[in-house]
Image 1 (cartoon, rainbow, N blue to C red):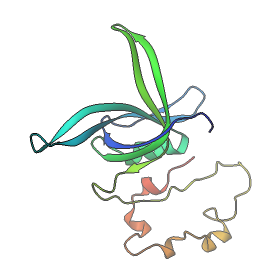
Image 2 (cartoon, rainbow, N blue to C red):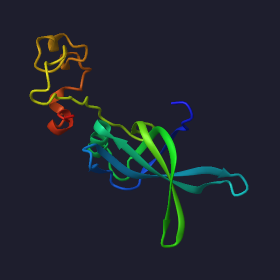
Image 3 (cartoon, one colour):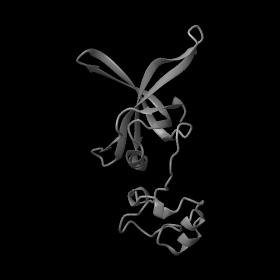
Image 4 (cartoon, rainbow, N blue to C red):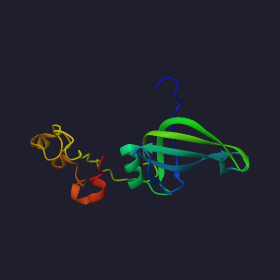
Length: 168
């Protein structure tokens, strides 16, 4: 959106992602990320840690549920989102925190490996007719991401049930 500051950064999940539900019924997840720049100190000939930046990351709706299921404290992640600053007055005076509303995030695969499982969205009972390609419809067999077409080693039976059946 015009006027938004969008950032992409990598770091490590510093707090356990926690799933909340707002009073209006919207799910959201909040967690902290620590990002420490490393640089080569040429005088000493060694790598040193720079200042650690702390970000609060928030994700909403189905992304919030995926984050709560998939990310854990200590995981390396890459986050893209809208940057803002929360400001408040605490017991020690004025405080502020960098906040990123995540539009995209996931494990940083330069530091490890991960296993991806698509989220299956289910419609509520009585919410209307199923859409073509929804599970349980005759068109589902022709869906472009049918599990029979999955790459070798990605069979659905290897993915935990709770990871496959996230609901909206």
